[in-house]
Length: 220
Image (tube, rainbow, N blue to C red; front, side):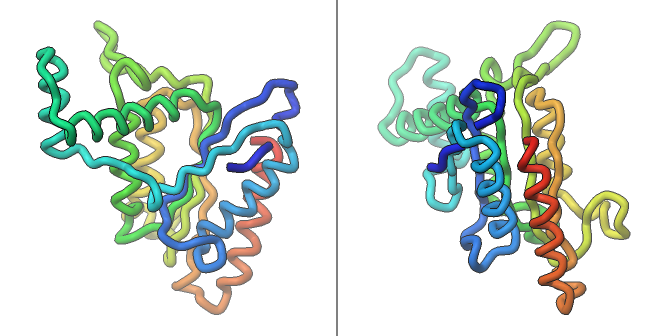
C-alpha cells in the first residue's frame, strides 16, 4: 500500500490494479505504472493508494460453484463451503471497487487482449445493484459516475486508435466499454507500444511514455 493527496483537502482512495506476472524491473507496462504512482503520490500525499496485484490475489472465476451458489442464495438454500468462499471473495472485490474514488489499470497485451486474470476481475466487479442497475425503459445504467480511471497498457506492436492495426486491439477497447457500462465518465489510455516492432527504439518509447504518464498523474 502506498500513500498519496489530491489537493482538494479530501482524502481519496485509489485502486492500483496490476495484471502482469512481472514487476517494474522487467515489464514495460509495470515500469510506466510505477512512474505514474510515484508522481501521483508526490502530487497527492494524503491519498491512500491500494495496490491490487491480480497475480498475487484470489480472483475467483465464474465457475459452477459460483453459479450454483448464486442460485441457492436466491432460493434461500444453504451453500457449500466452496460456494460460500468464492462468493464471499467476489463480494469483497466488488465492494472494494465501489468504495474507492479512482482506478489505475496496468496490463500487457497478449494475443490482442489482456491477461485472463483481468477478465476474471472484470467479471467480479460487474454486479447489478452495486456497480450498475437495471432501469425500466432504459436498461442497464452505471452507478460509478463520480469515479476516474486511467489505463496503462503495453504492446509490442502499435495498436492504439488511429494505427493500422487498431481494429485488432481488444484490451483497452474492452476495458473502455466496461467503464462506460459502469458509469465511469472517461478512461484515459497511456500506451507503451511498438517496443517489439521498433526494438531499437524501445528505450526511447518507454522514456517518452513515462514522461506522459507523469504528466497525467499530476492532475489525475
